[in-house]
Image 1: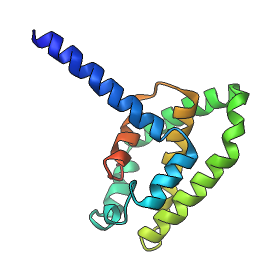
Image 2: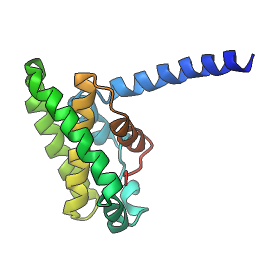
Image 3: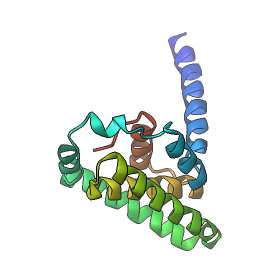
Length: 149
């Protein structure tokens, strides 16, 4: 009986995760969520030690996982030319995320660059429909209004 309940809960969780992934699938949907404060409200950055989080992101464990995901996604992205139609909206997202985060962090360039890079990676993964667990973790952190690191 417990396996049946777990299977049901797993289907429900997968359904919920799929819904949330779709919401961050397009750069425009991410920009809209940033504009409304649904995603990364200013309070996220006020409540943490930004330098400590950046130090964790610079650790070999985090950096290796991030770079592996980046290379995997960029390789797929490069082979699938139909995805290139999204380049201008991805650029707008990167720029908007950077400026929004730069303002929210009172000018912390490294945090703004990290957020911009992360959202680019998340959207590319979702648009290309790539299974990439590390990027799923990044996305889940942002959905929970946490700066991953």
